[in-house]
Image (cartoon, rainbow, N blue to C red; front, side, top):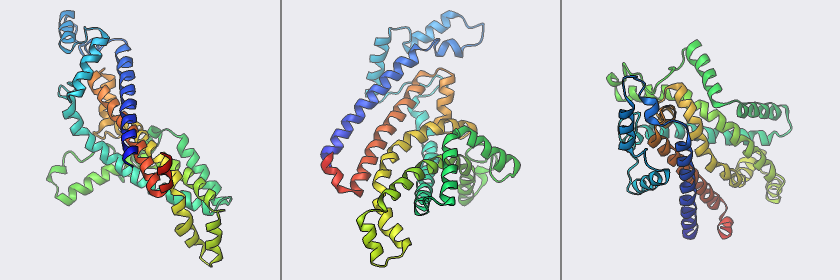
Amino acid sequence: MRRFLIVRAAQAMIVVALVVTLSFVLVHAAPNDPFGLSFDDPNITEQVRARERAKFGYDRPLGEQYIRWIGAIVRGDLGVSHSNGRPVAEVLKQVLPNTALLMGAALFVGLVGGVAVGTWQAARAGTVGDRISSAVTMITLSVPEFLLALAAIGLLSVRWHLFPVTGMVDVAMHDTMSFGGRVVDTLRHLVLPASTLALVVIAAVSRYQRTAVIAVLPDDFIRTARATGASERRVLWRHAFPNSLAPLCAIVGLLLPALFGGAVFVEKIFGWPGMGTTMVNAVLGRDYPMVLAGVICSGVLVAVGSAVADMLAMVIDPRLERLS
């Protein structure tokens, strides 16, 4: 396991370095710069823009900018956000917990719901219920997250008034509520964005889980369990289900960056004050430091998610450790 962790850490560093380097080049290759777009006042002269570019080093050659930026990253300095006027680290400290809450809730609900739906489909493979539920999951996977979000707002917020439309809390009343009231208020605002992301996770996980359980059911140990007189429910959940989890771990690592990408649109639509909303605003404002910080976070999620998936697979099936 120690060797595995060392190898995966080295691979993660290489992946993050490549992603960050490519993103740095692409961001700076785009036309215009932060100060060409942010100063819309015609009274602001080109000299002022040039002074601001020089202040942040955008007037220097791209290679020099990259070396200076990497040196700052190594020292833990992510730069100053142009759109927020604050250090990027402070902005991340404020918005990342909100995104972690949203992604954590969506991932938990999505995994539990996806595993349950997939196992249920496998137990009824070929039936009408299996076909209908499989069609529903495929349709859900085909619909972009932002359309699901708009549908949820239109039905559950605008028409039926069950949940708040936007925001993370009730701005007017949240601070006057008791601790329990504040928790409930946050949960009510969390339901729609988390459910939107969780629906996609459920659809994806159920497809893998269904296939994994169906692949296990013909095995000898399943026939042995049935021969001992165990009920079909016990055979499914006590014997087939645990042995079907190893393949599922392969996609768990991919869910983290996928959720992060989906959160970019979902947070913006629901007005959730997280990393997704911040990234959209940073891209629109050509906020280079903020955009690159988001890319770093995404790259780290990919690397960490992949390593976590492999470790979970080893815990479930120790034979995989010898192959690593």
